[in-house]
Length: 166
Image (cartoon, rainbow, N blue to C red; front, side, top):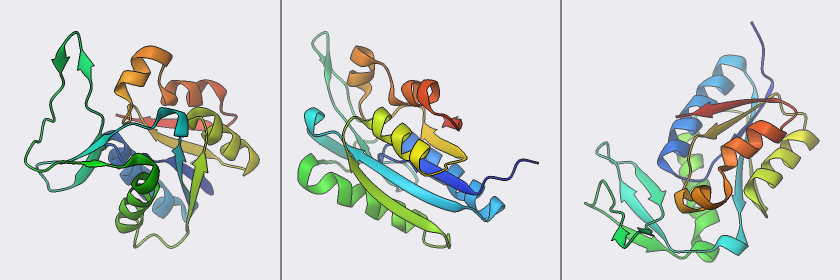
């Protein structure tokens, strides 16, 4: 069995990010590994982000956008408000991660600024990361249509294994 001693979770607060966080948590506990939570703030892509609530009561973040004149809708519209990205996003994302990982003993938190895929890969490569855990799609669904997804870029460019969670 492969032992992972240094796990990086690329966490953006999205629904898939929450799933990836749970996977990283389990990997960390099962392997008695160091877990590093990385959030990357891309100032060039600042935009309003909405907060929704899943049927289970967990908050997640999403970006509402228009495609061919149709506005996408929050699938769980019972609770939503807009986050001021530059001011609130890093704190909100890390607070969510800290709450979910409260019982994990070896957790380190990093707020980075730049292009998410580049920053995640660089951090992993420079810190002896064994595996990166990342959600399949994050908050920026519109950006993915234009430029490709962060998870695809991380998978292509990382020197270590990448676990993409759907």
